[in-house]
Image: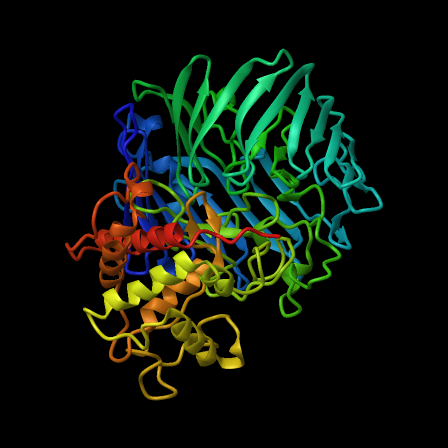
Length: 576
């Protein structure tokens, strides 16, 4: 990804499509390791800084991070600098012994409440050793002051010993006393106005971008700040008559802001829960500190549908979908999901919660920094969770999916979509004969091949062959159907039906191994051209034909190109 100020972002992946190298040369760079000290859970264990503006663009050893997790995947230790390298047995002769900006450890009860917190840095500049207690997952006392934590009848935090809070009828925070913060919300429940410290801000949001703020307007109606996104990722802020570029890595959540000349004007280095550390400088240059959340002057984070406080590592309000009539936001087999306040089930390193309702794991597309192409998954594994309706942070199922199962039937009602998919099967037969040249027949065969006739985790429900021996996974034993609700489509929305089409096409080959991404991209491209479906890609990073080079980046490009063509041919069915 290239920025107009001369800076560039490059990424490298391992054979599981996990980011191993994230680098904006001279600004910020990281190498991620997933297997330190014998671990192989898929979670990041060590983040090695390779470039930072805090060290003149060279590596800054004090920024190295180590992470460790308990048996439920909850973060229990995170060190920085010298301690991080000692933690992961990475300290080498000649390496500096300088401590980093924080060192913290945590412990939890069986429901995911943090009952132990000790260490220093980040939200707690000095050393702390806390053992907070809880009742019904509600924090009883302020660990720092001993003051009682108070809640309203809905379980919303109404006083934390520092300030008091009130909430509107929908459960959104309306007032916080610390800075006299008043907030108003639109019909979708997202913040439309705030007044803090006597200054009023109105928010203009984009429905195309899922409600993200694209502009801020003051009480006089004057534009004060604008935001630019690539998919769901904020990449630029416009303020003070200039454009500034945002560079945030997906693991440490460190952020650098560069001006039109490529110079760093703001440095944000955080602890895992979003606490600003002493390494940062000019952190208030723009209001977004931790992931996409906006930090107000009272240190609370606006998380779209809820408020987040990193000091307590949790949300102010319980999940707004409790009680959940659909059983969608909790899992009876996972006690962690009953905690309605927990942030990303206590793994803030590998997960984010962009709306305050849905915890997901995100990495980056190699080409343009967008969260696309299977790089953003729901739940704690790498994909394949059975979706349910409803909302929430609980459970191992991704929440707030648009429907409980892929609505492929809805797409096939569109004759343009149906004709494209049938013609696609005709075209891909030039590589190998498909199970059928009628996509509906392929789809029905795929449905019938699932155990229990439902979509779900690939380790328990696998796609059986359409043209091979019953009981054998089509092609080779490793080709499984992954229905990740997190694969994004233009605009950043996860839509399960497009993921299902993608994976069903892989398995639609009548015999032998499944169709690969190059074959899928070539067939889709050849069919799309005469139909004018490529016009919408002309000014995007997918304007080029399929890539035959055989590299990993080529495979990712071809996969994403296929998805984007299918989306153009089969636009989402409008919800009634």
